[in-house]
Length: 438
Image 1 (cartoon, helix red, strand yellow):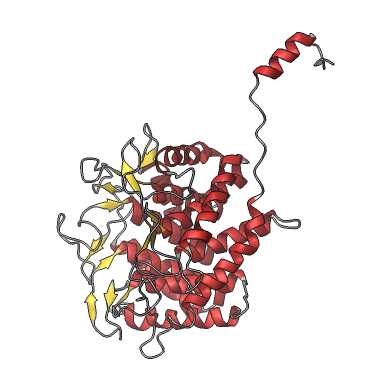
Image 2 (cartoon, one colour):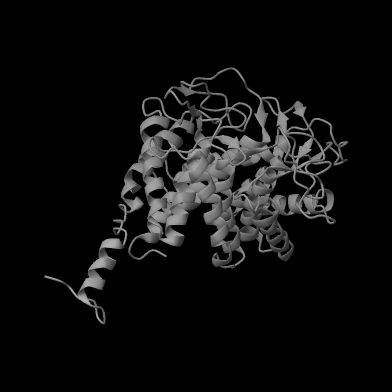
């Protein structure tokens, strides 16, 4: 029997039906993974870090665990991971994600412990800002210069700790740090921030070695995390000056760092934001591009701005990463690749997979496009089956192309921030999508 569309002859309707692509069934809703995500958060992240990371002798956190989760003897303490752990525990407390072993009071105590170390040992009471790295006791300043990447995480931690604990001292310190950055580091001529300074905030000569790259260069990576931190600070303080800076950082991250004709971001820039594209800087970091997508969403939400004007950008950055960096069969995202070519570094880094989870879920919720749900699904399976150490806790730093694992469970760049944050954010998105949610 022929079914006739209204106003169309039978044969035309049949031809149209045969020529149309088959309707693609929507993939299962990612929220079906909620129980597994929550279990991973509590068993492989929270239980890994509590109590082993708490330095009860000198303060702050231990971040020196090898691939098996055992101390590796590297005992210095860096601003980036110390601040990230304050942020993580404060965010856990604010999320109210009590688990089988630990609850909100435990998270607040862990956050307060790190907050004290930040203020007592890493903060520069004389010149403002925070030192980059100290010894295990916090008394010897091993790398005392000021880098804006580290300052961003200090601001992020202070803002989140204030939001979770309501500690007025934390907001006061966040206000002081914002004012210091405004006075010492903001580039009022070209926008954004100068990044590397001596302990007393004197500029370091361009071209000299910095803690990240070389002095005189602006990084997309630094400004990405400044935007992340400023988002948290706006929500904590509501200061008009902070809202102005956040709007500026949104402009940089959605426009300045994007190579618009090619569909990806690049990392290195001269002080006037001229992109540095020659080797060795002709590299695309897929993880940073997709992280940029969801952090832009958060920043715009903090200012009450709609997402619609940037949806095309979000899709463009995702399309490039899908084409060049995604492992469509095994799940997960490779590390880096050359401009307009397939991934060259095919390790799957823990932080890249964490950012992929959140960004894919955000894109699925924003656009309804089923491809993002499929990517979330495959990536989650890869993380839970290959990247998570279910026996000893924690996530492996990397899974190599041959399936072997590598890297420390914790070091000056690896703590509970990327994976902990991703799992918290996914659970929050699942809850908002449930009946009665946002």
